[in-house]
Image 1 (cartoon, rainbow, N blue to C red):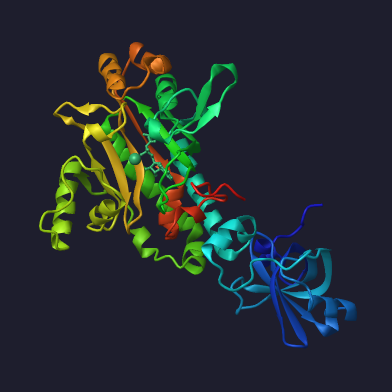
Image 2: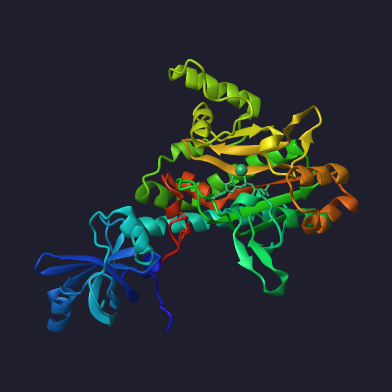
Length: 441
Ligand code: 4AD
Ligand code: MG
């Protein structure tokens, strides 16, 4: 069995009889007419049941079907200017596949987020959640298109890894046979660096894991990250790639999913239309001054922010507020960055890294930069970060055999989707969120 016609195809069948397969989203009745909202994943159509057109049993049944009954509806496709779809179905017959065993837990009234997260498997059926998942799909497709069109090769990174990439404090440990401990990957970057020496331009795109002990609106313990890596690219080239990439993703999603964004998610898309190159670029030191000025303007005699402090969520919002498009903050203090960053030859206190901060308070969506390509300097950095050389021997080989300047970045899909959809929390951007306090459903 394969449904012959989907709701998003009915226009091609105007005036003809079709059978649609779906679920009952809702219904109402005027007595003589029953109106069934049938949802099939591609759209929702109003099915009109008129007493004169169906058997007496069908007419009664149509008025008693509970929400989420699965059913096939046969009828004639009619143009209808009032419906959002432009068409409705004049019903001739119904076939029920399965009546819900009990009342569907998510009705058409408001529910609290804690309840909805517990009901996530059911919550996905609501129009808003469907729209978000479609936008997420659009983002993922745009990501692949961008790199594929530029000649990058997709290289899948492993999920079990022998060592840390982004600091040892957020590692998930897994027992691994006789070899002891493995860790769930925090990033595919180190593997992409090796692959870039083979294939030039590469990217990986998969799930990554962080045992983040932070319950914020931006943190998940399992999230999807896309990570390009390019041989013979420096920080400037990397920043150009970041800005081209972010604009492409935003504009491609706007073109394809405007209806979901505007009608369902009520996103102010004029803010997204502005996301075109060039993006403003400021150094970390300049960002510190912007933050200090904002803190002074808010009444602080001595601003809390000083050079060397991390730029947290609140500070990111202060910096981003000055611009109408994403802002690129580069050259952070090397001391707060991962071991693999190359230091700026012009000022060794800072790393050749860059974060992209999204506007409207969405914060860091991209982190990346140029990698240390000198063997001895990288070995010293491992010592400074108290990382075991043995686990990184293979990674040091990237510097032993034809080392070249290279750079890349990582973008978290969920933060990008939250920004594009205008969602407060990343938990709604991933089908089944994993957070410190949640592992079900
Ligand atoms: O800045 P991060 O930690 O950078 C890296 O992992 C680099 N190895 C990437 C690279 O250069 N190849 O993470 C990159 C991005 C962040 O900007 C953010 O979008 C996302 O990954 N991210 C998270 N998203 C959701 N929940 C978390 N706990 C996240 N941690 C990072
Ligand atoms: Mg970061």
